[in-house]
Image 1 (tube, rainbow, N blue to C red):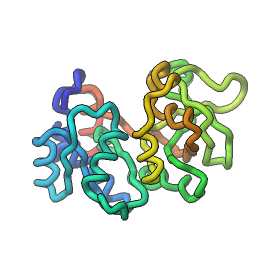
Image 2: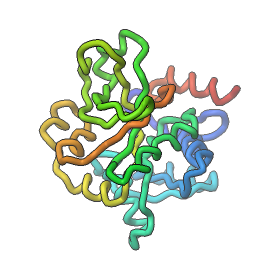
Image 3: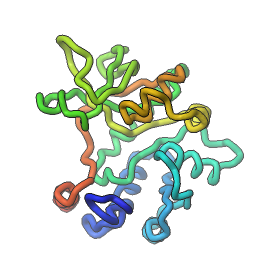
Image 4: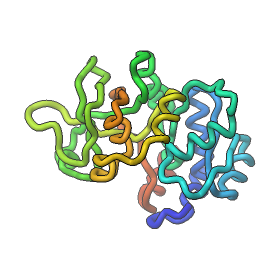
Length: 232
């Protein structure tokens, strides 16, 4: 709600619904299971519930979305029955539900703690853009990497593809609990990328490679584009 570029953006109208409700709808369309919006803003919770979705209130002082979803998980399921949780950001109203489902695939390997997504970078200017986070990883298959590092720099060097990291995560519950118990790490603070905390602690992150980057709504121009896409 406090976005400086788009104040109040979770409640911005897109095709007759608040943006956060559009995101919840995409999550439901993925068919993965229970959909819950974790928020610290009562107006957001009321909009979500008014649309027939579940919402849970969380503290306003969380440092990251991972901390917020862990509080929500503990509130909703204190008995520990839920084994996997997907963290979908609330500003992706046009995301393809198939991309959400793809994030779970790396967890089919029991050695993987956290799963995420990547897409090959095709535009030259994005390869050197520090706002485009890159995955440096070891290929496991044509559609999967084992993440070795995440960086805002252009990496790795040399011939071959570069991959843009999409910040959608699927956590095993125990992995999420461990992650939020860790202090911010040296490289995390330097790169300003929280996933480095997990790697520095020896946790394994695998990335499923998908075909497109979902539109994140951060500016009025993004909002108009999302409105056009969802009005077609």
